[in-house]
Image (tube, rainbow, N blue to C red; front, side, top):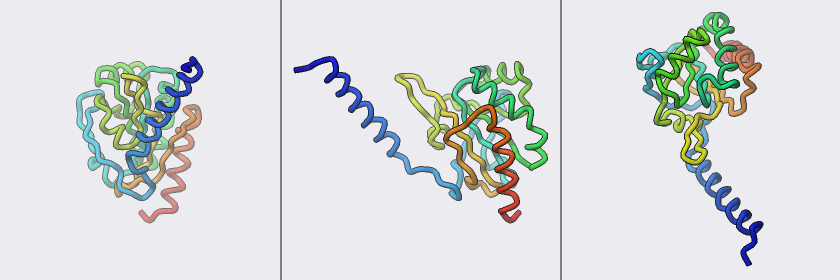
Length: 182
């Protein structure tokens, strides 16, 4: 007999197996491996690639949506700490699936001094395993990657507290720089 509880349980089982199979489809990114290359426009139309930043530390952070509360807090904390990050020879790059015009408005509204890259198709987010789908809607997950000057993944953050993430990144880069040969 098909009861509402049985139907819900069946759908949950199907949904869970789909999520599990999708998450297992790509091999997990690991510290020490080459960071996936990207080729994306920023809020001003300038194209950025990972190769552009060879020789520099890169903080590549993915976020769901311009001007949402958590994303604004995260971006503004990086903005407020940009002098410290620059002193460490670090380039901050934000990525979401929003358009260049959305990024331009977000940048202007909050005075963001770093590029926001438009990954409208989600290909770069997928390469970094930071893409999620909620029904027909695609969003970037809030993940951050520290990439070393040789283009290798030095640190991966899959869980981010926007209120202290910038400080956490600064401390991690200081530690990485003192533990790695320059």
